[in-house]
Length: 302
Image (cartoon, rainbow, N blue to C red; front, side, top):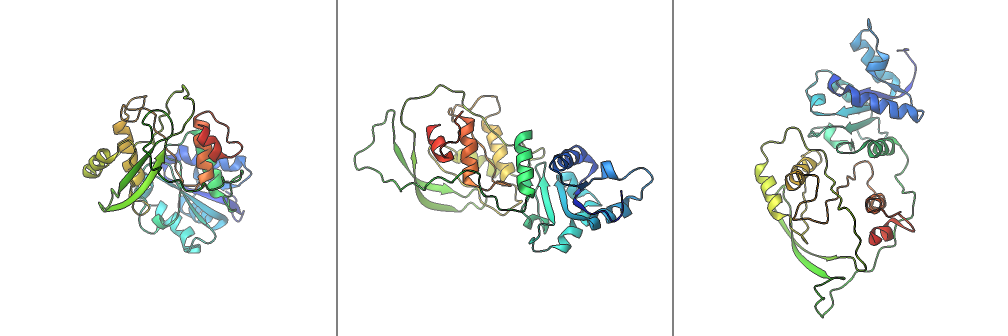
């Protein structure tokens, strides 16, 4: 490793996640970023500690590859802490955590928004990574849909067969804290001819070690019913995604949607791509619709 040569990114990781670190470095260098990564830049005979010190000093930004092993390592805390010290408010985004396995991100590191690659396929993960490390605004490439005018429930009851119908939901549940919030939400099903298609089944990657949360899992399973909205609330890093993943895999352990949700299961993570327009675009594509003229209209067609 050449001392004093400025690099864009230093990849901080453990040996258990070397394949992820190399994949991340490769994607970045394909986009003409420069990286420092132990597997490629620190050769036999080098002083590991001094090399890590040089890497932390010469790289503008540090990518922390998060996994359970990352938090048990003796060396990685000093690597991400060096970047955190230079930018404690996150104004320059010198520290960019990238989560590659289910893990709770707690403490000071938990306050930094991370890029979440858990449960993504390769193309989606690449998009999440490259979008997340860019410093410009996450403005969508297509115009957002015009917000619809709020609908009201007609006085006459809706026909219970095909077509548009409305159902009032009077309760949503906060699974983490157990507090209940009373609210009303109207759900509309699409009208028009039906389409024969394979129902989607999307589930985030299941956590390898999911323990001591049986009561929350059982409650969430009991609350999930057709026509009901259930929210899972909590601070970042508390394991909300891990809980949802466990519940979805319990509901649908096979390769087909469960009988309780025959129309399928959709999952979208807003980490790295916190734009509703992008979520609607991906939703439309799942059902074979191109996101034109807008993702919102394409989703309605789907």
